[in-house]
Length: 382
Picture 1 (cartoon, one colour):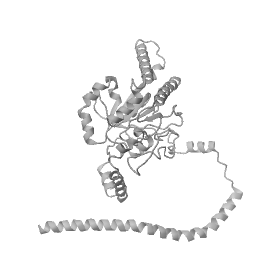
Picture 2 (tube, helix red, strand yellow):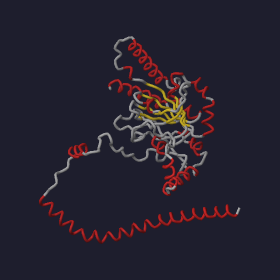
Picture 3 (tube, one colour):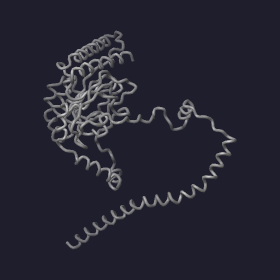
Picture 4 (tube, helix red, strand yellow):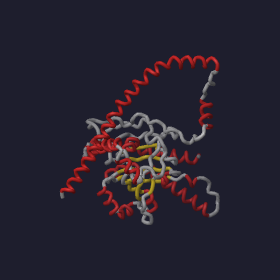
């Protein structure tokens, strides 16, 4: 017993010594950097006159050629190891939902939803395999992250922010226009300024293949009306935009597009020329986000009930997402209340061209139908 107690004491002393050495090193680094900067300042002052003299002498003999945008682009294209496809992402504009109530931060006393002033979404296109929530690190990478003090501090901040979020804040925020975060625009955003819908990862209602899959392959090449919600309340709000009874104009467009695609497919099977109309596909996609483990397994338990309410042709377009929804995604898409339903109109390049939240108003339903028709016309001209 004494040997075991002494061994535990040695281990504890070793851990304390390691912590002390790490803290001493981290505290000493700023002082070392400041001393190095102070020593380098006089040297820089001494050499400043020489550098100025050399620059003035060289300027009189060799003048560098002027750089134009065309020459800069040509030089970047000719530089080895560079690619024109690897462009830096567009900077994110100031927050659109700056005053909107959230599940974290300061409590909002009054709020009135406003129309969207600019496109929303992520500044980079989605890639399958992103935002899966699966840890694919190797054992060595996990060990390196475990002993990294900076990553410990970052993880500590994330846990502190999660623990500080009130559980019932989202329910309390429903008092503001039933949780409406923003008012949908009357017309779609232009394609060249629109931002992207992220890739999500979840299970579908298919019986033959129950493996989780990405949403990006489902959205690419099609005009999609994407409903995002969590729970029955949010699903009802999303249905106020996309339901056949609630929005008959959208249901009429969807029926006409599907019948056109079926006739084109039949003509192609018969060997006749089907044209390009078969590619203009309109679809409804449902994304059910459930991050609570217990509720997620309840949804899986009653998956047969969902299949009975949704047509079999749309089983592969219903996703149950459990993880991977980061704060960046929520802020970019406006998913600020987990109890509210949101609707996004996504074009064939996964760009968000229109968005709505909470219960739909009459002008928002009309705007969604007009925007869908506009995107179908754009797809037909492409």
